[in-house]
Amino acid sequence: MCYTSIRFGDRVEGRPKMMDKRWAQAPACREQLVLFQERLDEVVAPEHPIRAVDQCLNLVDWSAWERRYAGRRGQPPIHPRLMAGCILYGLMRGIRSSRDLEDATRERVDFIWFLERRTIDHSTFAAFRKEFGAELKDLNRQMGRLVCERHGETLLALVLDGTRIRANSDRHGARTAAGLQRLVAACVEALDAKLAALAEADRKAAERASEADAETRVREQEDIAALEAQMEKLQEALAVAQARDAVRREHNGKDAPPVRVPVSDPDAQVVPNKDGGYAPNYTPVIGVDPVSRALVYGEVLEGSDESAAVLPAVAAAEAMGGAPLKQVLADANFATGANLEHLEGRGTPPYMPAGTALEAGSCAIRPDPTQPLSPEQCQRLPKHGKHFATTAFVYDAAKDCYYCPMGRPLSPVRSGHDRNGVAYTNYACPGSAGCPRAAQCVRKKAPCRTVRRDQYQELREQVGRRMATEAGRAIYARRAPLVEGVFAEIKHVMGIRQFLLRGLENVRTEWEWICTAINLKRLLALFGKSPIHEPRPKAPLIPAQSLRGRPVLCRLKRIFSHLLHSLALQINHGLRSSTKNLLTSENSVVYILAA
Ligand code: SF4
Image 1 (cartoon, rainbow, N blue to C red):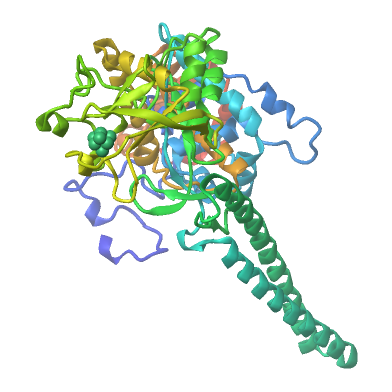
Image 2 (image 1 turned 180 degrees about the vertical axis):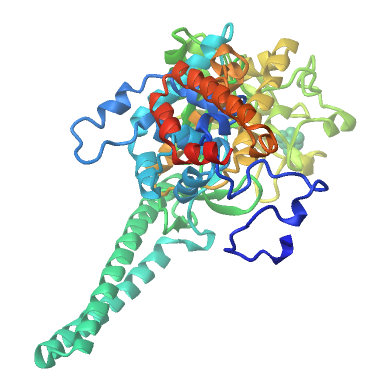
């Protein structure tokens, strides 16, 4: 038979001509009868990561998950270890959606091996991934602790960073409060029209009782239900927009521009993307142990202020390690005065760029600050845009004034509290008239140059001095590779650039799954070559062609020796049911007869 003449559905009799010795032989011809069904354990290679995942999941306690199933009725549920294992392994392999996971459990041999041919519906996955938020936190903590325990001295320092991940919401679907009010009004109008149409359809159905009228009535009812659902979403977004507008007006004055709220997911905020532009985003923050690289903290913030995560992250790391941290490393977004004060006060030195601290070696520092700097020195002063930065001015504590690059004193003119309750004093230039550096110093619209000093300034300068030492630089240099590497892993390797779920609580649970998958990867890296990865012995298969042309006695001898060997292996592994299948399998009988 010519190989090319075989049509779909044809039964192949014999071997096609194309399968001669010139071409590679198929190890498992589709229609070949076999003596032994291939065991699942033989399909997955001994060094396949799914085996290590399976064993790592046995190292954690699942009793809290199991308790949630107590008292449930119906069919026995699939163990949460298997459900969670599928989701975590899927995340590691870039399989995220519930439907893709369902497909994987039917098609991918690693998932089939892990689940031992159980199949899981996409709706079961979707419900499971949202339901176990608290238990998942505990699972993540257990895995993080396991990773840390395997390393030497861990949880002595904490590295923090945040990123932006897109919300599951259309960029163009964000509306201001005014826009939302217009949409609500349009929705009310449409709803009134539909209710009138329904009343008319009811009246006609009562008069004529025709099938067409009944259908119209059902259609109108469906439209009304859809409009009511839309109205609910719009009103929820409108309430969020009004609340955020009120906060913004309180902070930035009554002329502050209105907030835009994504209608599909009002919990998300329209803030700058990491790669440019604006879109509805969430701001997740992670805390990494620098020795083991385990994630000891992972949270999605309610707003976009990353500094809010410092104290909870420190508390979480110390709860895991059981001892106070010795260092906290983070970028300038985390270095608020309150955070610096808290960390210094509890003896955990922060390594964060303090922003307004004078740098060692700056030409602003001079023996006599009342003397003006030369034009060349002024060029080298720190700048903020085109103008001198605050660090170009030197503070004199004894006289409570700043000295500017021209050596003139800036005296206190105003004191007060900012919107966060931080006390400050403004120092102002006596007058820029006749100053040759005025263009580099004063902004166009400002009447004079001012410098603000708040209650945390001394602390910032202290942190800045520590950061400027050689040891401080070396410690801070470890920050970026540690945390940025994790974000690269999440975004580029795992392909997570947008959340699948909507609403802050759901997104937090999704982020917890992602952090747990990262910790599972760390565990795999630890256990990858350890004894837990021991492969089971494989039962050798007898290819059909190896028996052809041999004497009958020789064939029987080979078959029975193979059977005995397989039986010994099966019994060794306690797979009695498989052994029974082997002996009674129809295929086995056919194969023996054929041989
Ligand atoms: S504008 Fe005022 S503060 Fe600025 S350099 Fe001139 S004198 Fe000093």
